[in-house]
Image (cartoon, rainbow, N blue to C red; front, side, top):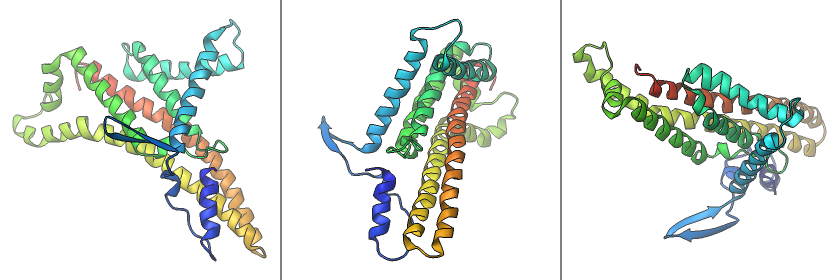
Length: 271
């Protein structure tokens, strides 16, 4: 059962009047659960969607380079275009001259987020795992560990943390104010905003699609003049689907670009 179908059943079973969809779709019942070393794990339909999206994008990327041609076919062209976008537009232009070695990681990040975001408009799935805060948070923590490690590797432990804690050119009395702000910005705000931006956009997009699609379904069941408003709601659901498609690509790109800027700050000697 899809998330929309599950919510629709709840709406129609709730009695007269339209019941706005809630957050039930983000907390599906576990398909099965197990424990490892006393830690309980649950596998839900969102977990399965994450696995399917990961396998699908992995297969696609492997297929694009399995038999490379001088004149690329459609699949090879799409794969190469996506990688070139990340390599040239982010690794080279955002990270800097020393950013090309990070292109594979940034491309993997971009395609992984993109594939999972696309699940929000794929029939049967109809929800992005990135609309669950835990998944963007894990990605943000991976990025957080990586750009700190790169900074330490490139600049050394002392210089890296000194430049963060004590910005060059700042009067010493101002460190009382500036240093806590820099600590918050580099070690707390960055990963938090990375995760929240992706999560909030995918969460809101899913809820908007639910409201218009379920609203159209409900209005069509009422009959009478409601058919007119049902048609308007159905049209808005289509419009919002195309808008969601734009958000899907944009959020994957923005997340990757921001990671590129953080890598640039870690590589460069000056912050």
